[in-house]
Image (cartoon, rainbow, N blue to C red; front, top):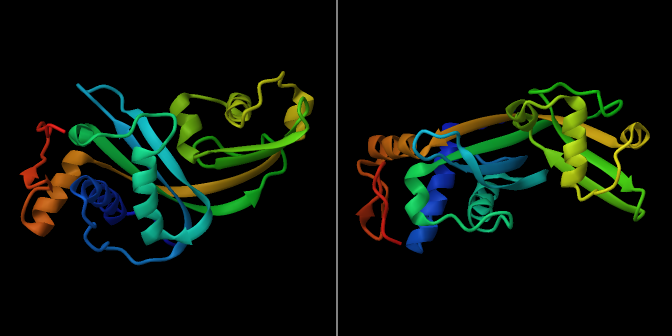
Length: 217
């Protein structure tokens, strides 16, 4: 089974920095394969709890090299919930890469384990008679401190449902559960990796970008 690794997170940072340089990233240091995947960017300043800056991926298998390259940029620059990440934010960023595995049909909306399973829900909106769907990665519910019902209810709202949530409606939801492996890398760890393995710090337009230094664009 392919698992999320340090090299995958490095490749996402490489890809973002290459974008700022108008260049291509170095070749990845991991083997290609076909898996569903996600890239999540968070920002932490002054020791605060990291806050989400972008998260996009795919629930369908795809080549992970091109997938991480695409979603590193899409999640950083084109997540419609956020403004594009600017190069000056690099020293505050952390990147989490996720490889999704073990898709299973759940018996009902309670048939999953908080902290272990991610969820895909599908249901018919009774107000508009349209299909709705949404997903949470496995770490979301435990990070938010949610139980089963709150997780399902917020996921229904994420899917675009604004009506009354009843027990009868919850019982009609089709739930697919899945697991994931993930790897989180802070920008400072990325800088240390690049210095160790490539002999120099990451740079934008020739200017090194290390912790605490913010380029002027």
